[in-house]
Image (cartoon, rainbow, N blue to C red):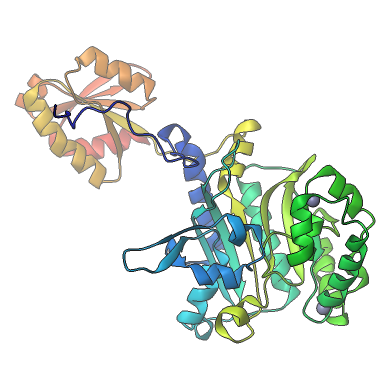
Length: 428
Ligand SMILES: [Zn+2]
Ligand SMILES: [Zn+2]
């Protein structure tokens, strides 16, 4: 028997770990876009967008092969052309790729850019973690000055403050450089050698491949062992030491609340010197943003030193927090008018008039169907529109429109040719 292909046993669902952003959350997302764009402009960051697909090597080399992201969280696949590509797990390596590819350093020094969009990590989906999630990022490429380390923190804090989030704190550390990090790493390995029997399985792997990440483990036993581990501050070279001090000085000058965290390392290998996270009041484990300096990434990807510093903000987490704290997303909304049409003739004429109003920058709502006048007015009430413009059979014939003030109920008839001016006058 032939199966009816139009009927399905089960309607399609989102792919595991993926989620839809629905209209009910519009205010949250749009306030992020709107405030984010405004903040970027004020701080003089320009827009950049890189493709979602990149060559797999970009991240293997850029982020580091021994990181969790590259080892187990890459969303990679072979294309029909037998290229191995990956859905980008983060935004910084692609931007550095773009910087080198298009010689962006020639056009501005430093280059200050912002981006936003979906990122992908093949993680086990658990509460609040998605395989596709969104980040907003800022990058300053081409400068080593601590001025920019702190500017990156400031733009992040200003963004979150503008969204209505209060009491934010910076957790900060340095991860040193090529000169001083190897000595520290050796010390760290020495320390953990004696603890190998007590650390978790992941940490044993980290011990072999990426010892700095030992400090990052969230398992309780490992955290206890960490307390006795040597800290990098005792091993910094002079350049890293003075860079870190300058950063802290500027943080204090700007009255940023901060807390040095000698165990902060972050999950990407490209960081050098400054690393930081923006954490919430009373919940230092939940970072809303994280970033740092990545002076070696340019060299890894393009063969020359390009100092840079950046940050990325986790938008799903930010929205989750805003909802939890019942923070008003504070979107400035345009006042609207509701256009009511009664009858076939009015519907036809109505579309032209609605378009005329919209061309004049008036926000028009409508609910055209088989609705009665009464029902349409009911809907208009729910939308909190200031005015309703009513077009019925008589108005069509007389070439007029009735304007109803939804608050007072007062109705006035105006000629259709004056519809824009008459509406604007009443919206003021
Ligand atoms: Zn150093
Ligand atoms: Zn561990």
